[in-house]
Length: 270
Image (cartoon, rainbow, N blue to C red; front, side, top):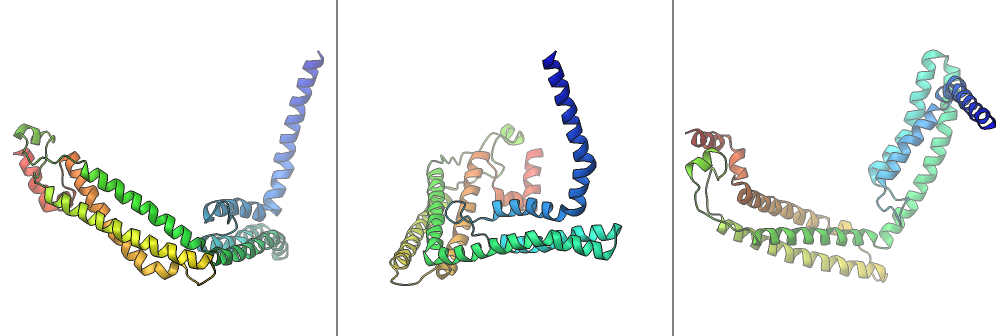
């Protein structure tokens, strides 16, 4: 009997709490503090996604994240105050704006000062160069994997039977791509050597920064990095096209050409 009474009391208290929250607490928060609540919800997402380093530099953010934080600190309280102004008078809406903007602005100012300190340290200690080196080590691995994929291809120039072509089981445009494969592999090997030289130069610059014998940053390598990145994307795209052709039997560049597409469809339907 005592357990039943306790359970009934728990149900009544829970219903009472939900009623008070729905009737009084929630309307109060939405009317007076919605600007603060909405800001911290958005700020949590921005901070989580905008960090450059989640461990050692948790206060250093991407430039876009900094701008979004500063904008949100004013825009969300202002939007809330405008909504309040639609149902009340200007003086009350102004008070609501000041209250809702104060906490976000103070918090954002503190975060931005921490961001500035960590940004200075990030470049002074050469962490931008470390990130540059790690990024190009990943590119090197990606190129090596693509080279392995190309070298393992078994290319056959034999044409398929007519019934296979009609069913889509064989190449619509049979072509021996052995020479193209070898050229692509040579390009990847050449890019791999260039990346090794690039990483070696970045490591040398990092040693100068860490030993405080010189100053350097990742921006010094920006033009060379952009050139390398474009070359890597181009050769990886070409390699992927070759791999897809061998496994699917369709040359992607020819499918992108509408004239070749129509010609191929006429062959299939003949």
